[in-house]
Length: 77
Image (cartoon, rainbow, N blue to C red; front, side):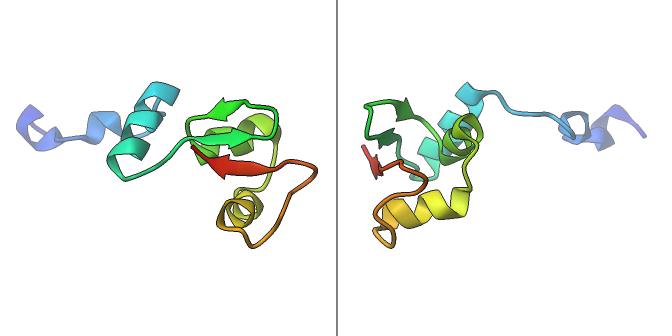
């Protein structure tokens, strides 16, 4: 394949850094999240990974469907 036809194929498998994910999140209307201890998480994905929590359950806390999840309380900044 010629270089002109490669397009973005070189980016396949690229894992974005936290900075890149945060930038993409903000561009799509994403907001930072804070927990009850005052720790700020720039992305929901990062929060779930760092605390080993289920993203869906964290979303329920953020939407008000649940009051807490595994002892954590979250809110948007």
